[in-house]
Length: 107
Image 1 (cartoon, rainbow, N blue to C red):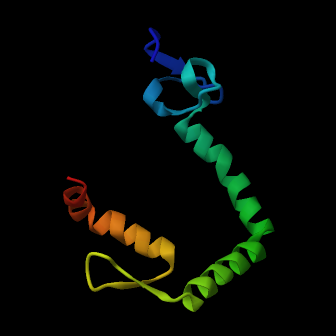
Image 2 (tube, one colour):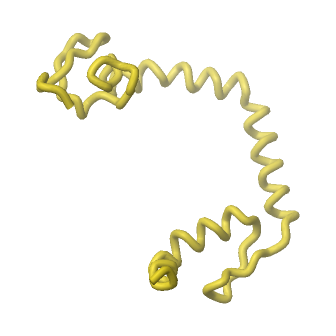
């Protein structure tokens, strides 16, 4: 990244190579000020508290998503006899499972 071989974490005050910091285009040298382990420890209670506070919303959203997929009609794959519920799943299947076939079709 820069000529500086490592960076000091602002939490634990230890020096680490740049690979031990998450990328952040707004941060100095293009990385976060906290090292990955310190950022993980800092984020744990925040993420957990947010989930607990909004738990019912997460559950409701998940149920709605399941109902949409359940009520949608099956979509047949263009390249095999497979059928999939929901456009997202069929698109994912086509791109992940039929990569070689898609590349051959482009040529």
